[in-house]
Length: 245
Image (tube, rainbow, N blue to C red; front, side):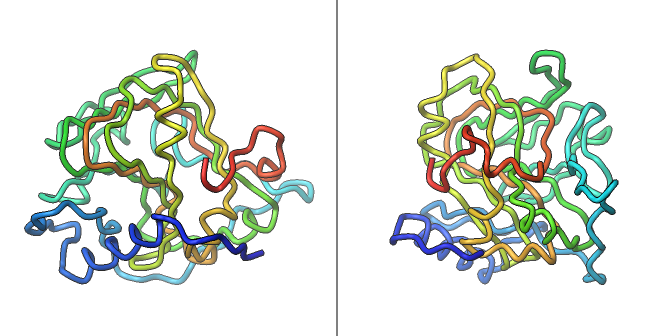
């Protein structure tokens, strides 16, 4: 299942992520370096035995929704992250407005779907969905699933934008979404459909996922998302993204 890729800036990015974590920048925050580095993965909670993947219905793996009509879907919680605190909980199941400084969130809609609008105002920031337990999602990887969500770009990103799936820090997989968001039409709905295999190829262990989505950047950017889910078979769709869109 593992793919091979030519060297890319992502290797350097992941090195910065690891270095930041080793330096002690976690959910309790820490002094930022003089040169902004990639955000550390959200701080892990006490380890628990990995939870089993959702039971298949009639022999088929169900769609796994992690952010839907009522916000974050249990066991996942929506957080904002900045150097001051990388795990600031968004109230009301992730559906209330919250200003964390470098990034803020407010409720919105994409078409008929309730969603969340994230605004990076400049400076390092991220949002992520995370559970306290590790969850075994290997069945989704093996079922050619993709991470799928609706999105609207409100402001074109001014710096690199990365997307991750974490499996308890420092375990993570990352893809560079900069070109995708820079080329997306501003104010129009687009669909993100990223194969899970792209995250597996860069480090995600799908037997122990605790953070099914992280989006990170260091400068101004505006993005709304809705209906975030893992869809079996979607990685084989004609409109699925490449690992470096």
